Image (cartoon, rainbow, N blue to C red; front, side, top):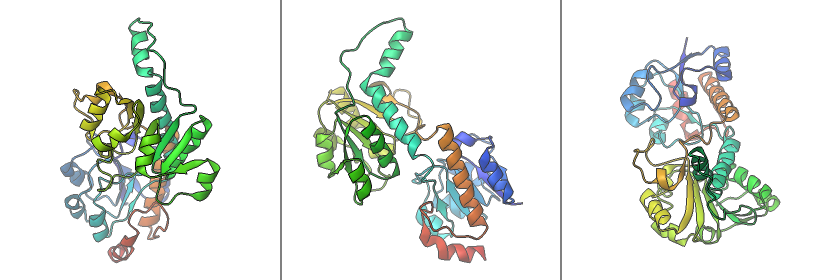
Amino acid sequence: MSSVLVTTEPWHNRHGKYTQVLQAAGLEVAFPPQAPLMTEEEVIRAMQGQVASIAGSEPYTARVLEALPDLRVIARHGVGYDRIDIPAATRLGIPVTITPDGNYGAVAEHVFALMLAVARKIVTTAVDCRAGKWVRHGAYIPLRGRALGVVGLGRIGRSVAQRAHAFGMQVLATELYPDAEFVRTYNVQVVDLPTLLEQSDFVTLHTPMLPETTGLINAQTLATMKRGSVLINTARGGLVNEQDLVEALRSGHLAGAGLDVLSVEPPPPDHPLLELAVVSPHVAAMDAQALEDMSVAAAESIVELTAGRFLCDASLVNPVVETAWKIRAR
């Protein structure tokens, strides 16, 4: 019987509804012997003989993929795929899928958790109270009536904008191909990035990690942000030049930052952003409903592709793989 390796951290050694989906299609479920966040060598060893993976953040480099002749599908548990060499997967006839509809609500809620934590100094005051100190840290930053800049108006960005509307915030967004009906319904002002940074009280990042977006937030762009504004990042750590952000926080130019992602995860214990920002350990998409929805969607993609049914929807990252996939499946 063919086997699927589940490498994503939330489901390590855990079964769920996704298990039933795979087993109903005649696929076994396996787990790697080591903890998640595997190295290249560990991936190569663990994936031998596996036809597919419900993948976490482990590396699928060209070297790894070339060492896995039985691998037919990589189903990413989430929407980011920067740890997968897409050209190599395409060349080798391996479809790569994501779960675009599984986590956007969870991430949007976490954006507001971070925004409120920074604006209301929740972490600082909670630590004070636990230590027996009843300290009020001055006037807090309101959300109502303030401008929220949403960098990227995809599924997550739109979900954030909906919630901002309910909070009484003005929403600005950058997006090359905005949904006109959505923009009209939620009164979103579509602007360029410089305008968004200059006019927003809060800025939240929802753009993919690409060569052109690496270091998008840097000394130059931070300098154009409003003094006293707040940066939120739940997308990818590499979008932000972290040393430049440290300087902007230390100087007081930014009032704060809420970060669910960093360039190195986990960060070293002396990382200055652990003191200067509200940091969570890349958990924005990890509420119970999102985890289940993503695992089931990933399993369904694997079932379809291992059964020889090619996908033609937004879950498939590399649709040009079809020709090589058909050749490999013969």
